[in-house]
Image (cartoon, rainbow, N blue to C red; front, side, top):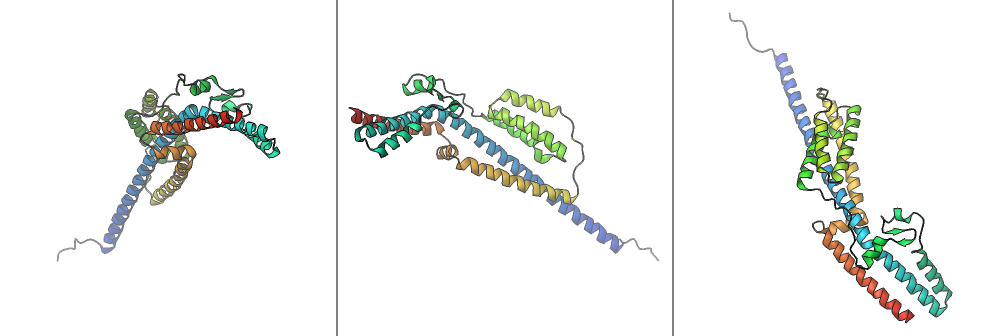
Amino acid sequence: MMSGAGTNPEEGRRAGAAQDETRAEARLERAVRTAEQALIEFEIALETFRVEVENFSRLHHQRLGPMYSRLDELDALIAEAVAARTGDPEDARKAREARGLVMPMPKVEELFHGWMDSEGLSPEATAMLTEQPVKPPRRVRPGEEVRRIYRELVRRSHPDLARDDAERERRGAFIARVNEAYAAGDEEALRALADEWAAGPPEEGRRPSPSEELYARLEWLAERKELLAAMAAELESSAIGAMLKMAPNDPDRLLEEIAEQLLADVAEREARLARLVG
């Protein structure tokens, strides 16, 4: 009589269950990795847009700020001329309000990025209005190589890849420096940061295997995505963000169009003032 060499049914069930668990955990891990990569790409896109918004904001304030200031000054002069003609108390009140909008204020230069100070228009702003050459602010539009290095650095050091709170804190501090270099378009600094990360402390080597940890990672990623989405919505709904979205591929042309309209408004106000005081 031959002895049976078949597999014990209970052992077969256990082996099958283990295989099912392994496959399920592998699928879950792939989902986590996909979510991590999607979040990193979203954060890169958000940071890129933030840099564009800040850059456009600086250009907008420097180039158009003096024109807005000139319009406010002309509105005040017009209101004062009207009040002088009519003698109406209501017109006098409107004139005071209009003048109040252009009265010098302490520390106003902190609010208007240098084109106005506590004494009024800065020399740079005056030069802009008189069409004299003005040194533009530093343009920060990261090039393709800078973006490539930045993406690679973020993929390697992103806090989402941390295994514990201490590692997440270390990565977060490093990413802050990476973002600062990227915002400045500093390729040399980014390369130095890449070398620093490569020479940094090694990973602990412990890979999360329990499904509970993978589920916790997915939950954290979802919360992070909601936070980033809220930040993106805030940027897009801001005045500068909304303007930038009108011409994402040619923001300089948008500035030119706004400047042309403001110059036309200034000319109209000056003509009106001339008629009132003439």
